[in-house]
Length: 224
Figure 1 (cartoon, rainbow, N blue to C red):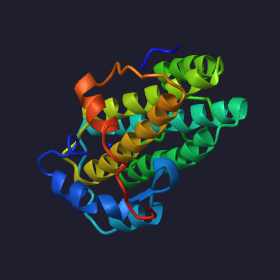
Figure 2 (tube, rainbow, N blue to C red):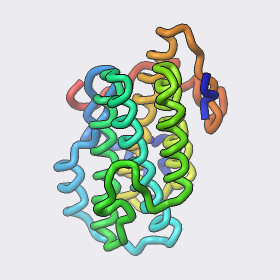
Figure 3 (tube, one colour):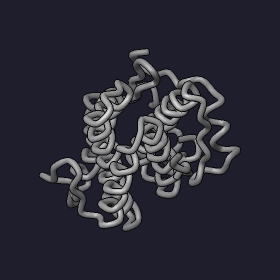
Figure 4 (cartoon, rainbow, N blue to C red):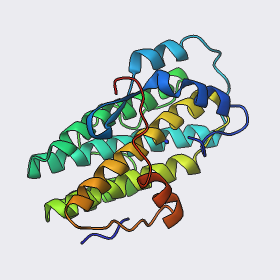
């Protein structure tokens, strides 16, 4: 079986209060913990604040996260076509709102969009392109491999969001909601694996951090 390959921790000085206070305004949690971003609410929030100058690390992080969120949805869409498991169909729809949320930040800060006009499975970032190809191939081996790939993606997403934590309030707000969604989706995939008698072993999160997530209930937002 495949080895397991948003934020309290994303909150940092300057952005934490905005992210924490607005979580329920953006996160919409549905069946099985599927967590989407309320795009109209996000657009309304972004349209009402000043546009701060971005650090170069923030700009690079947004470009990367735009494609990584796209990767999640594209992999799930491909695996749904192979296995027809509802979890992949439901979560890929939520992931589309995740990548759209990052796209909104790229537009707000007038940054190039690496995912613009790219079809499913096509990425500007070579490492993400290779990862997409690898994960679709692994997930096509069996349903349990597919579910492990789902857990892998969500764990990686949490780790990458934390590594790109920002003091910019807009970015902190979006990343907090994305990480919340990833925690819920990680719970959903590990529950499915548990039902199949399989235990997922984390790679990108510590065992303690992973256990803290999967041992707690789905984080509920609007729509629950």
